[in-house]
Structures are given as structure tokens and as C-alpha cells.
Image (cartoon, rainbow, N blue to C red):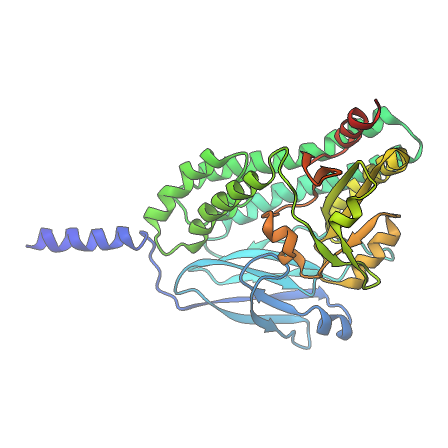
Length: 388
């Protein structure tokens, strides 16, 4: 009888995920070294969110103390990922499990010329709940810094019309995306039995690496039935497959009507009239890789506009001021639209856009002829179609 009872207890431990969880809440505290002005804090508050995305559900708005420190209680009865958005300047995803955490932030960029280039943020604790996140974040941060530096040099190379250097630097920028994915795969293999591995799976492409993700996420769902993030990873694969069917070559792109910065409605199908090819470009002012890509698009636009090429840009911004400023700063003369809903943009939702920049090249009838064209690949594709 004793053996039966012990077996039952062991079975219960397996079904609940073999995860000793005794705490209802954990404490997260730290300091924001350079808090922005009060007006900025009111517009872009310090929040605890469901996910790292800008428009994720907000659970709590956090008020700094007089010395710029903060301390909050975070529900942890069911272990899970949360995200902190620090006044729109810093963001971090962390695991709420058994460990109290200390997370310090830089806060506002204090340089004369402010850029959206967040520093590396370390999650301090006595335990190992956030070990995977810290290590993977360091890899991603390093790759991002390389991408930013290459993007700046790439822009300068384009200004002096050094095509060889421009291509080399463009390839370097693109290589960072692949490095992030490869780094994430290593961490997935190393931490495959830990629930926190869902964080690393988020850096692996659900379109290109479906089999890899399923190999690791299916056992997680069985081992940790309470782990909603694992189920979401699998759901994202289904969404990606559905979106892929909508965007095969020859598929008709949906008609889109959204507002330009002046509040005027612009309809995609109307915009196609009189043109041979139009690039539908998903981007945002806060997206560094998008901003690095804009000079390429501008080059192709200037070179082929007279031959029938144009651009229809859909911004995933939620701030009109930042959107309008980026359009001006990057000298983009083509159609610009947005519903200012961030990632919840209607068109982005329909096509399951989870990473930007992303684009689709349409013919005059609105049929997709190519997609995800970056750097020299965009010019090569347009040249192939129009230099006849």
C-alpha cells in the first residue's frame, strides 16, 4: 500500500511539472538610474506586462520612490514569464518562480543625441531561475551592437556610393539575425528540461525551424501542463503556417485602408493603380533593423520609380509623433499608413507579422511576386522585373 501511495505522489509530481513551487509571490526590486521627466513618465509609464511586446496586457503600473528605486510583488504561484517596460527606454523579460530578483535599469539615454539602443540588463538573484535569460540576453545584446555599428557604417558607405562595402556590411547586418537564432538553439538544447527554455524558443523562427521547435516544445507541454508559454509557442507555429499559405507567390494580398500622418485614408488597391510593382513594407520607428534598411529601400525607390516601382509602408508604431519624425528623418517620400495599434495593426495581425522589417512585393493586380527582400536582394528582384 505504501508503494502505491508513493507511486501516486510521484505521478502527481510529474503531472504538475516536477517543479517545487511554494511561493505565491516573489519580490522584484531595483533602481532606475536616470528616470525621464515626469511628463514622459506619465505618457510612457513603468509597467509590469504579460509579454515584452509594446501593446501587451499591463498588470501593474510601478511608481518610483524618491531615490529612484522600486519594489513590487509579482504573482508566482504558477511560474511564468513577465516583462518590465521601463518608461519606454528599457525592457526585460524575467521568470517569476522561486527567486526574489534585483533588476537595475539605466533609464533615459543621457547623451545629447538620444538613440533607442538599450544596454545589457542583468537579472540578479540567489537562484538560477533566470540564468538562461541572462546568458541568452548577453548573446543577443552583443549581436545587436554589432548590427547597429554595421548599420551606421553601411549608411556611410551608401552615401559615398561604395557598393562593395555596402554589400559587405549589409551581409554582416543580416548575419546577426542568423546568429541570434543559432545561439537560441544552443540554449534550447542545453536547457531543454527547464520550463524557462520557452524564452529561448521565442528566438527561433516558427516558419523555418518548425521541426526543431516541436521536438523540444512537445515534451515541455507534457512535463509542465501549466506552462502556457509552451502552448503559445506551438500555437504560433500553426499561425505561421496559416500565414504562409496566405503569402505564397501568386497569392492575392489583402486590401488595406489606413490613415496617413495627415489623417487621410489611403487604400492599397487604389495605390496600386498605374504602377507595375509596389513593395508593402512593415516597419516601425523604434525598430533599429528597419531604420537601417530604409536607405536601401530609398535607393531602389529613386532608381525605379520612373519605371513603375513604388512603396506602401505600414508602420507598427503606437506613437504618432515618433512615427512622423522617423518618416522625416529617414527621408521616405512614399505612402505611409498606420492605425497606431503597434503589433496589433490589423494587417500585421492578418499576416501574423511577428518580426520586422518584413515586406511583400506586389504586382499591379495585388499578387505577391516576392517577399522578405532586404539589402541588395530588393534591388536585384526589382531590376529583374523592370530592367527588361
